[in-house]
Image (cartoon, rainbow, N blue to C red; front, top):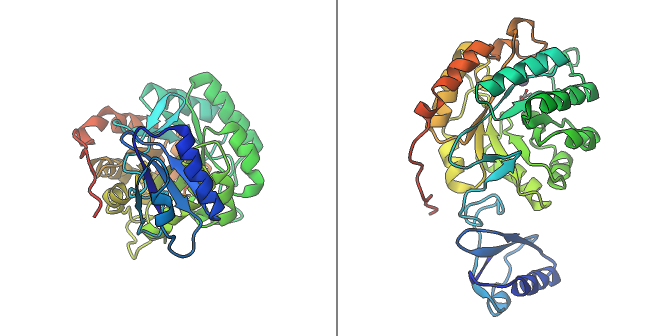
Length: 341
Ligand code: PEP
Ligand code: MN
């Protein structure tokens, strides 16, 4: 349920409504907006009677939210969510590029990549310190040393960091260093991890599980938001289909669909979808043309020697090629309004 307040409402009136929601055993979520103040209501298992809320001072309307996901939906918040990280505005007019190696391997590899991607226009640095690998025998990441190297790369370049927390046991340590905490595709339904991310003050980049429907993806984001963290970035990274010509199938369809039903920023990771370097740039361009708010791209100074995902990592020269004509692939006029049926 969504309680829409008069645009000139004062803090006391909002607090009175929030108190009444809590008294009913429900959870209030004040939602700031440019055109209206609203309070989302969650926690009900059956429809809530809207009438007692309609009479409270400052309330102009009470709307039932029909979708199973609530806080992530545009019904709750018509305005796009914009997330600021180290001066970078994510989900705003210009696409944001997060670039860097799949894994942090050494100080030299990380700092060299960070300096180059920054000079080519990347906004944030990615790099895994804790890696979710399909095989227990594959490189698992440098762990805490990897986080220290990332912090050193940030000190040298000023680039904010995106790095993954693979479980609740490492979350505290990861959020000490990360500017954005990544939750990987395989963890998208690790509900304790989602709840822990919801209690964090760091923005979260949530990757879509390779078998998740749009609804399951948004419900995973809902877990994070329901705990109070509203800074969630959705990231499509390819789904599993019968196609064998690529590692995964990039679901371009989900980009406009997510933008339509949700206010959260939508990123695309063309690297994991393609699995092969030569297809990463075309997929990145397609993602931007379809309305993605940004890209998450793997870049390595010597991909043939990479300890993970070298086949899909762009060389520094290829990353330069991608960055050289990004604006060409970005729709100049975004639709001003998204119609919600
Ligand atoms: C990654 O970003 O390196 C990664 C492991 O991604 P995903 O969780 O999408 O497989
Ligand atoms: Mn990877």
